[in-house]
Amino acid sequence: MAALLWKDIHIQTEDVDAFIKDRSSMGVIQFKTLINLCGANMQFTLNVTLEESIKERRDKLVTKVHCMIQGYTSSKIHLSHGMKIVDAIERLGVGYHFHEEIGMFMRVLNDTPARENDMAEAALRFRLLRQHHYNAPSDVFGCFLDKNGDFKETLRHDVDALLSLYEAAHLGKCDEDLLKSAVVFTTGCLSAMAENDQLPQPLLEKVEHALTSPTQRRMKRLEAKLYISIYENDEDSNHDILELAKLDFHILQQMHRDEARRFSLWYKELNVRSTLGPYIRERPVECYFWSLGVFYEPQYAKARMMFARLIKIFSLFDDTFDSYGTLEEVHLFNNAVQSWDEGGAKQIGDYFGYVMSLLSKTLNEFVVDGASPLGIDCTKKTV
Image (cartoon, rainbow, N blue to C red; front, side, top):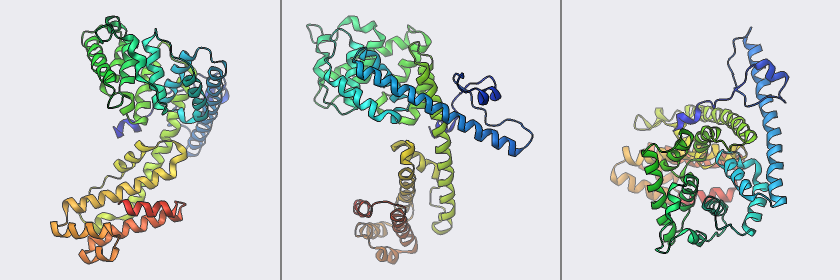
């Protein structure tokens, strides 16, 4: 999965020079970073120019989509279309640009009664409200049941309604049996359609993507990467939002690649293997990928790097427990960690003392970098 995330998103352009001269008229662009020019300096200059142009275009699209969401919110007309726009924005990974606008839209949506004659719309409204921590009642789906308490047969052939209900049902609570039944019902219907080749290719891709894992359970960066190609083939897709998603994914991808590189260099400079030996798993990129799964937004760059460092150090603890220490040693080491006793860890052995001191040193560096001392103390207590 990590390898998939580092692959370039497909961005199109006919002519790089034309793109630089006239960005206002461009469509979805295909970024070409490696162009055979006269020399490295000119290539670097062109790349910098392209990156600046991409960010400028991205910012213009952000402003345009801002106005789009505000239009749906202020007019309170066509909220059903507004819901689709908000859902696409969030699934494409650009929702962080519109936190306030989406929040206002959700407040209006929550205050507007749901229509009872459209399953796709009702399920999408329910899912968006629950994703944004509103207490949307599940009895909104009661009107789509027959007299026996089963979902109406007419829903079995409505792919949009089934997909929307399938995604919504995975946000059910433990005591909501209706939503549990909805998961079984929609999974069965959608699986049958996919297996019997009853769907056109774009719709089939959408169904197979959903059946693999519902949106709520996916890592957001990977979901954005995969959903871009699905949304691109959707006949109802919004061109501006699609272009924004591609450009923003590229910009964040460059940032994440640079962070992964810097994190790998940090780990290399630690030279852990020379101290702890071959039992250590050296997986710095995997550890960074974990932190990227928690928060990918650019404003959390420092926290992301700190978290990645903690994960890497905790993996050293894990390896020391699993692959190095005897049962007696790990019991003693566990007691030393629980009481935050660095001296006690060193008495057990050099390896145990090194791992403990490395964690302590790293946490102290976090405080120097601006982390809350109280937060660091809480981290020590929970280790």
